[in-house]
Image (cartoon, rainbow, N blue to C red):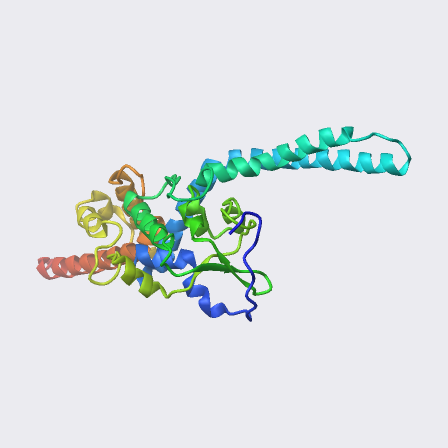
Length: 316
């Protein structure tokens, strides 16, 4: 498709039933089991936020350059038009000013396109820019993007505000900033320059069910029944048993006790994190903290009962 031409829209009624086919939710299903989709989406948002921070300054400068030179070109054009109405003959000299200004205004877009896809036709996938996220999760996302960039892959699309369905080029999954397509924030997705057509910020959806894509990629998901969880919760719970701070927890205040256990678990994960520094948040360890508090209450009650039974009778 030639640059500058937008794909022909396909008029369809608004259909919210394809929300489960959003790119982010499909990626989340690849990273974890269905019951932990929200946790996986939080991880995806974290990865996308890291990419946005890495390119924020560069993108902001390019937007300023485009706006400044576009404004100068518009002012020069208006000056030329006004001069024509007033009978002042400036000849074609203003064109020598306006054309360079226009070139400078569109220059950032060409630079941004080259930064993401390279010059000329897109034939190879560019190395992706990531900042944050575990190595395993990034590798899984890259497998998804590689699959969607194939000619035989399900087509990707987004919906306009009017519900119009517009297909996008598969080459968008081959750019350096493809990870931003997973972001929940439209302004982050708008940073990605499509290789063909016009800019868009709509949420990308795929014409396939998540389970079909998982089967096609032959990936083993983490985090569900019978699968290894994303974080080493079992190891954390075992190590927590020997933590002397558990004995000092006041179980009279259940909320305070749970928060204390959450803090201990988060601290353990931060201490044992890999080179990515990835660790679960307090809300992610909360179910395990509640189990620990419940077990502590049972254990202390049992010890108290045993102590009462073995305590010798005091003389009257």
